Amino acid sequence: MDHAGFVLSRPHRTLVASGVRATYGDITAARSALRTGSAPIVVGAIPFRAEDRCALLSPERHEFHSGPWQAPPGLPPLPHGRIVAESPTPSEHIRVVENLLAMVDARVLEKVVAARSVLVSCGADIPPLSLLARLVELDHVGNGFCADLSPAGASYTNSYLVGASPETLIRREGTTVSCWPLAGTAARSTDPAVDEARAADLLSSVKNQHEHAFVVDWMRARLTPLCRKLAIADTPALFATPDVWHLGTPITGELRDSGTTALDLALAVHPTPAVCGTPHDAAMRAINEHEASRGFYAGAVGWCDAAGDGEWMVAIRCAELRGNTARAFAGGGIVRGSRPHDELAETTVKLRTLLSAFSAEGEKMLKTT
Image (cartoon, rainbow, N blue to C red):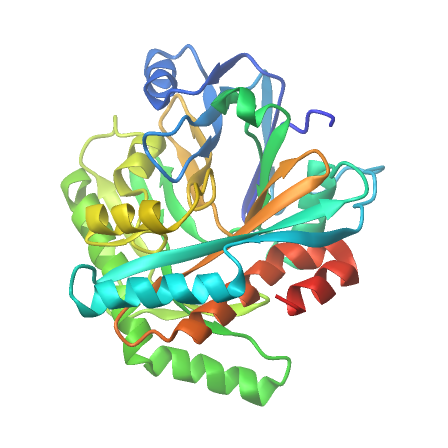
């Protein structure tokens, strides 16, 4: 697999980085390199669990471009893929959700995110940039990312995290901080009338508003000590992706200390209840008990420069690539009132973002899950 470097494609700006000056499997080493100026910029991915090794590096070259990423000519085609394994299976996922819902009903948890993954096998190695190009093309505003995971250690050699996340974990420009947390989901429809009705139902849903409020409260609690001003919209708005509607709340703030970097901010708020749950420690324990390792899914992917500016996305709608395989992940928030079969359906809709890139065959296989 050719080295693909790092790409973060956003509607307003794209960062492309290549070459490797230094790698950081330890987040403390990456923060030190930024603070001392030995790394002009750090790019890469942070795992879901804080105790796992990160995959950050200082590139030899980087450049910013306005607008979404423009794929270079001559990329190899994506090979066809098929789903060869599911973890857990759909029926097992329903049982997991039932167990977690019992913990919510017993008030051990207020919210917890249950995730599952599917393994796609292809007839040839999957070119990371070819998959990225397809995802950026499919995303209506050009979101996408590709990060080399090899700094995380030998088990991630020649592995990449590729996806098209719609959710900004945190952005820092000067002393201005912004984010747009998403929680609460409804599937889109190709019928405009049905699509509009689903959006309206999501906006008025007590269950989804309740789920969303946990994320906003978390961001408020984590950012207030770091910001001298913090503006949070009173009510969430609709946020559309090609496959789903989300509830989203824009948040902006002004830092108390200009020395607080974008990486510092990302670590302060990650993982949010949108991908973990609340209370945080109890939700994390439940996830560890009920799921295999998420790796870099539900982590963060992005960049931070020596001036402290940067942008980090929540690592969702993504897959970990290893040779000819891609493990794609999706999750859903379990709160009081959740229904297990609905939660399974939500993960299926979210998986479509990644799997539809692997042609009609991948889409057909997804419908059988």
